[in-house]
Image 1: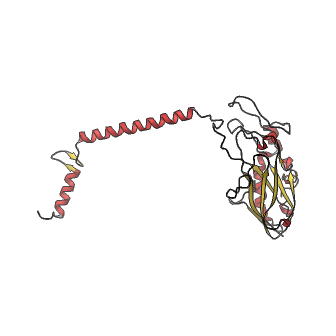
Image 2: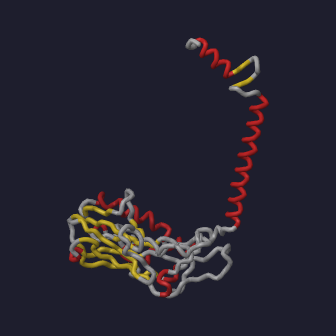
Image 3: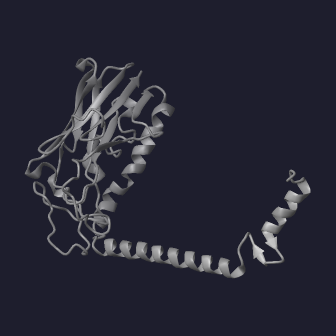
Length: 281
């Protein structure tokens, strides 16, 4: 049998697409295509129903307010403000306001919800020294303690609207990540300390903490965003009042206390924050 011509191959292909003699499309009759289509509709309907049923069973066993399993939750991470250009590198020249103004604006924007009037309108004054445990149904809206920016004193942006940057004594704001139900320190205060991470420790001479170097227990525990709607995270403001200028310092500010982990080398945010600070004259 000779090789088929191009015309014969085209004719066979057209016949495969639609055969007027057998009334078949792509080798199947209308009845055959209908049965296949019906089978796949039934199959995927069944699979979709199974998926929806499984999701429903999972969701009705979970609480939207509190995670069921919290025994594997890591100790808190730490972040700081200012946070510019997705980096924890602070560098500016004291004599050049345009170099430090972005940091000041970032801090001012972050502290708006900490304004004294906002806090007085939203939250309540609490008693220091103990956890603010609220024993009530998890669906009930929880009260939150006031944390006023005026408590940050020299780093509040009230006394000095440049947060110390215009004097070459910059402030940073340190906060812990929120963890539902977590009571930091488990009865003992969590403190903050800063040091040179790499290099000569003498380059950092003095550091001030506001309102103190301790995270006040009355701001804990946190009950979640659905019920603790006005919760304001406590802050520790750190002002570097004495440091070597015209040199980049690798700094580490860390949490200290019971249950805190701050020595994991491959996690720079677990229990500590590592950043660089450069103050040029």
